[in-house]
Each structure stands twice: as C-alpha cells, then as structure tokens.
Length: 390
Image 1: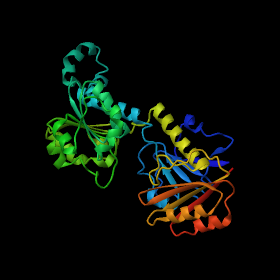
Image 2 (image 1 turned 60 degrees about the vertical axis):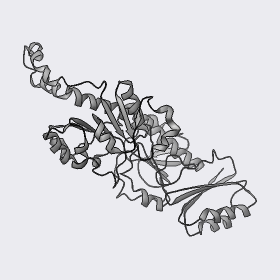
Image 3 (image 1 turned 90 degrees about the horizontal axis):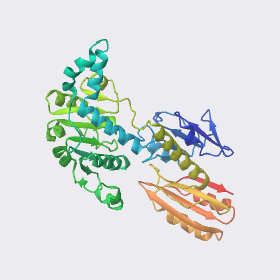
Image 4 (image 1 turned 90 degrees about the vertical axis):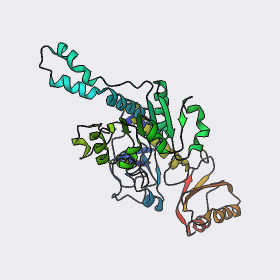
C-alpha cells in the first residue's frame, strides 16, 4: 500500500485516479511515498526518508525546495497546462474590469442602494464608469507557455491585436497550429512595452524577472497602459506602478496576488488569487499530479518534473525494473550502462539528464542480484536506487 499525503485540500475527483487497493490518503507524513501540494510552503518542512515524489497541483513551484529535494532523490512534479484555461479566462475578466470600470460602477450602485430613484440617477452617473472596449486594442503577452498561448487565442477571438514573446521563440515552431493566425511574435519585451495597450505577464519568477516592471520599463509604455499580473507577485515593483498611475502614465494595475501594500490601494484591482481556483482547474491539476505520481511509483517514469529529467520506459513489463537517480556532474551513465551490459538478464537500459541531475531505468528479466545493486549504488554520484519488482 502506497501512502500519499495531501498538504492542501486536493480535489476528490483528482484523487479518485489512485486505485484504493494500492493507494492510501494518509493523515500524517509517516512513511509516505508522495506528497500532493498546492500553495503550502514546504521549505522548512521535515520530510520522511520514504518520500519518493512531490507533485504540485499547479504550475508554480516557488513553495517547494527543489534543489534540496533533488539532492535527496525526491522527484518534484508540476502540472503545466492543467489550469491554463481558468487563468486565461480570469485575465480576460481583469482586462474587462480595468477597461470598463465595472468594479467602480458596482461600488457606486452599492453606495446608492437606498436611493429610491436609483434607476433615474444611474443614467446621470453611469458615464464616469463607461470605459473602453477590447475590440481593436493591442495586448502584449510576455511568456507563451500554456496560459500565454490560451490567452492569445481568446484575445484574438475578441478582435484584439496580439503580440507575444518568450525567451526561446524557436520553441514555438512545433506549436504553430496553436498560435492565432495574425499573432505578431517579437524578440524583446521592450517591443511589447512600446506597442501595447495591455501588457500581460505570464512567466516564472526568478532573479532575472524580479521587478521586471519598474520605473524604467514603465517609461517605455504607451500612456494609459494596463498591466496584468496573474503570474507571480514579485514580477512588479508596485510602488513604481502606483507612482505611474498617479502621474497618468499607467491606467490600471490588475493583479491576482494580494499583499499588505496593494490591498490598501484604491488605484489597483486586486483579485484574491483566483486564477487556478475554478472547479475544473482544481480537478485537472489534481488528476494530472496524481497520475504522474502513480506512473513514477509503479513504473519509474517521470513526466513534467522540475528538478529531474523526463524519462519514459513505458509500463513495467519485465520481472524487475531499477530506477537510478544521480548527479550528472560526471558521466555516471557510462559506468552504469557498462554494468548493465555485463548482466545477461538486462533487457534494456535508458537514461536522461537535465540541469545537473539524471535518471536511468534498467529493465531486467529476473530479480537484480545484490552485487549489481551494490555496484551501482556505490558509484559516487548515485543519489537513490529503487527496485520495482513484479
């Protein structure tokens, strides 16, 4: 029985993909094989030696200590694309809120709810909330992952002029069929700042992207630009944006990340982190995370890992399968493959490496003898070795 622990509330529909005869949702971390998490902070947690995997039911993994877990041989997964439609729809809602001042208008109605003639006074007051339409406006999408691509499709369907950029534009060649027909790809963020009415941030937080929206980049923008941040809190210097709003340079800042500063600002539209919180997105993320854990525990396959390479040896059909996680600073796979070659019962041996870590999968026609296990485990860079028996 494989024990799974949920750090956050995880969709029951998602958990239902784990067969009850083989998996138990545990109420403690003792002897668990995997942890499912959403936004809970894991950086200071003490985790059991039995832990094989952590799966984030979502895309962002800032709440997970990736490198320390990699050094312990714990594979961390995320679920890219599972919440893409939910987030992109909310970004469009943010665009409408910023363009039409729907929020201000609704607040006016609430403040005047006791007015018996509100149906008449509305006609006099409504012009201040009228705003502008999205049709024929331009949006620049910085980051064209699953969310950015879905947002581009929606905005194009709304009749907007869509610009987009990402670090590696060449990677879009394989997904041209997903791009809107008239989408304009540009090489730099600066081109988007200069050309677009709306600027949507759809990229990870890193030392490089921290406060990418600041006084300098704001000065490049069109007057009246609307900034949309549904990606990460630290991407925007909010004090600089507030100054720009007061100066009339920026029209509105819309964010899905409340904090002690922006929650006090009347000039921001702050949404309570609802991007990936639709019923469908929670189900999709949980199902994907659970299935990735199941495939890793039962077959050793890795898909959508953020600290180890993806590797797929298919369903386990051999008598025994060996999963080897190692540091890739030295060519350890050469040594492991030579060990594999000396064993007549080895059917196949595959390996993959990424960002300093590797995974090898060895299929054998019989149980692996202890000499082979010891020979591999004693290699300097091997972190963890696990045998999956029939």
